[in-house]
Image 1 (tube, one colour):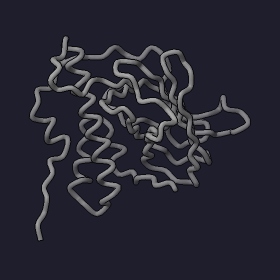
Image 2 (cartoon, helix red, strand yellow):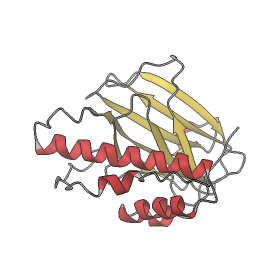
Image 3 (spheres, one colour):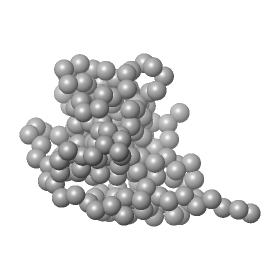
Image 4 (cartoon, one colour):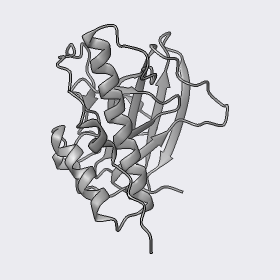
Amino acid sequence: MAFLWVALPSQLLRAQDIPVYDPPPPTDPTIRGGSCSSVVPNVLSPTLDKRILTTSAYPVLLFSVPTTSARQAEFVLKDSKKETIYRRTYNLAGKSGILRVTLPTDGSINELAVGQSYKWEFNLICEPANREHDDFVVGKLQRVSSNQCQKPVSQVSLWERYRALEYDGLAIVDAMRRANPTEQRLQVEWESWLERHNLGNLKKLPAIELK
């Protein structure tokens, strides 16, 4: 039997020099919990400011869903004009773990524009009649160029490209581990990424599979 070996994303990225750049701290509240959850929800992000950088036109976002009495979760994406361009509600059915949110590629929304900043919101709907009680996490999303022939114009753009490739690598590993739940090497890769980014407390959470 022949086996095909595929280098995992982090193995490819570790060969690069990691640029040094400290992003500015967030200027607005990005997280709230306690209304109906044991702990606050969170996004799996390489940075503390919850800014997701990606090279994908229709990216994946990964969220930790804590034990909660909320029956539904909601994902919202807004453009730079604060207009909602995508909204989806998920029936949690009492599940907790890692939820995979994928932007649709069916033409219902346009692909993300390179360089434009978007705002995302992930809400646990604690009281449907009073959304002010939602537990939530919010942050930014930006698509960067994947053209490796295009030389970054600054240290900041080099850092952004590295972080985008790193995050996209995590999304790939997540998809692979969901498709191959008994593959230990994928689980090790997943846990290693979370530990490197101070998210080790989430590494044993199960993948949420919703129909």
